[in-house]
Length: 118
Image 1 (cartoon, rainbow, N blue to C red):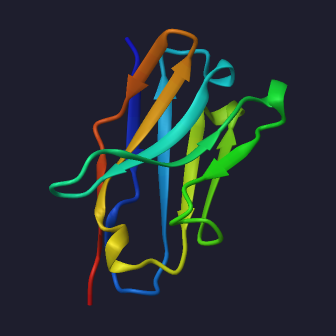
Image 2 (tube, one colour):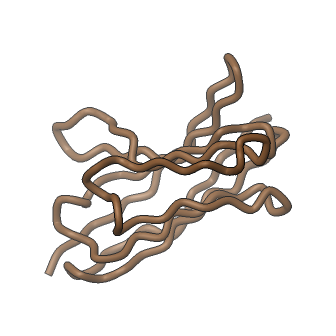
C-alpha cells in the first residue's frame, strides 16, 4: 500500500519560516519525481516545487511566486522529500500536498495546513 505522509504545517507569522516533510512508503522512492502542490480556499491546486530523480541530477524547479523563498530537497535513503519555506506571506496560506509521480503512477498525500497570519 502506497502512503505519502506530510508533516510540519502550522500557523506562522508573516516573514516566518516553516519546514514541511513528506515520508513515502510502498514505492521505490528514488524512481519518483517528487512535488509539492498547494490549494488555497476557492482556488485550484497549483504546483509549488518539483524535484526530479538522481538520474537527472535532482533538478528542482519552482513556481514563480515562491522562487528565492522556498527550497525543495529529497533524501532517497529516508524516502523523504522536504520543502523549506522562508519569508512566508499571507498568500502562502493553503493546504500543501505531497505528490509522487513515475510514468503512469501518481500518488498524493493527505495534505498539511499552512496558515500565515499575524
